[in-house]
Structures are given as structure tokens and as C-alpha cells.
Length: 63
Image (tube, rainbow, N blue to C red):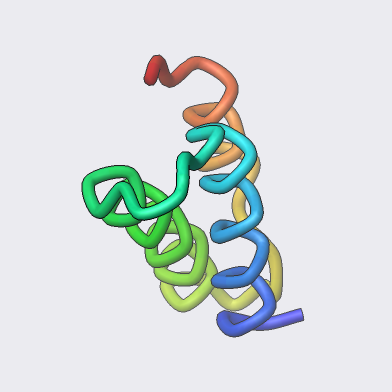
């Protein structure tokens, strides 16, 4: 896995979290932001997966 795979994982996370209603551009911005955050986290490390610290922020973040 790398940044592209984690972008897809972030996209899936955002889709699940936002319960997207069709054609809602503000929700799409939030979903894509999640995908970028996942891939950015991976690009800033030597690993091919998100860090435990980043994962912990997902568990504690509020909508």
C-alpha cells in the first residue's frame, strides 16, 4: 500500500462517514479532504500505511 491506496481508503472512510446524498458539493469536499489527509499522512512517513497517531485522531474526531 502507498499514498494512492491510502487516498482510496480515505475516500471510502469519507463516504462512509458523510453518508453522502447525491449532488451535495460540500459533503464531497469533506470526503475528498479525508482522502487527501490519508494519503498525506502516508507520504510523510517511511511506512506504507497511516500512523497509529493519525488513526487515533480519526477515532476521536467529531463530524
